[in-house]
Image (cartoon, rainbow, N blue to C red; front, side, top):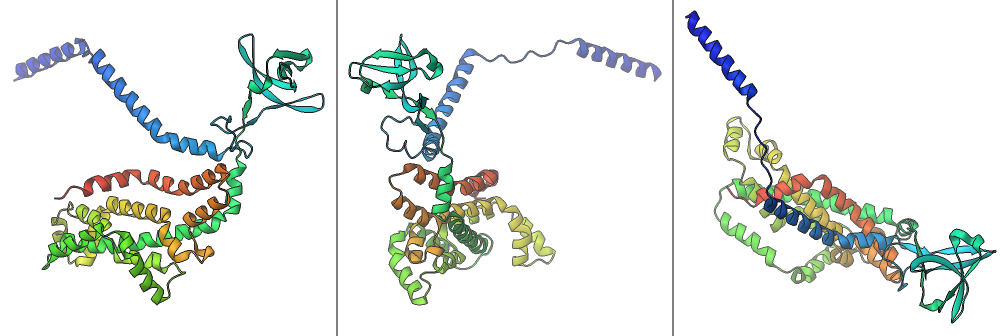
Length: 370
């Protein structure tokens, strides 16, 4: 027995020494063809992303433009002001002048048709420089100068805090109503069996194809008879009665949750409502968050419904209405318009970035029916 154990130890020692002396595995070399494909794919993705984000970057540049730059045909795309230089107690405009084949920013002191006189801001002590040519053929020199006060001006003139409070309140209350009502309806269609369930669900989904313009006059008439016009009620009450799109999204997600979990909860004595709260909802958070983001973005961007019901109540209006009214007053100043637009975009973008992982998961899994 001892000899067998000794032989086994010798074999293990030999195996360990061979493993230790064995050269490490060679890394897989990347072929030039595969590297070229990877580089091409990355380049295409970067180009598409840059094209997608270019309007947003342009909006940021426009929102920071000074008032004197707006409307100038020769102005650059970035926020800038005309460069000037003080010389002998006077202020002169700076132009880009070609001297000895190189462009230099020079201050125009004496204007002339055939020749003009400039001074170099970097070396004013050198005196005047005579340049042959018409100064009208030159382009002004611009210096980068973002006007951050545009956002403060928009914040004050548009009464942004009040409109922001109204928009957030309408969006959050409507989100609560949408999540509660749609979750209950989706739970009923996903878990309960009753006569006509398929027909009722088909009718519910068919309402998605009903144009919104068809229901404007009837719903407005009803709300007018109830005395709700001029209040938030027409924007909030309908959210507590579910909608077909969010019900479908939640139902598809609930179908992926195994029914065995409901049966286990029933064995422990839980009723349908207790099962919904303790079993279904904790596992359906991705879909619920997706529905919440959908409604917040919809309510945030909704313009037509607040225009119909809140046009006579400036204190109750949302950011969409306030921004539209502000744009009509400052239609000549694109910087103010873009600054107001970017201010209204900040909160939805932050919400999406924070809940992006749950949002994507809820959308992907909701399309898979068990």
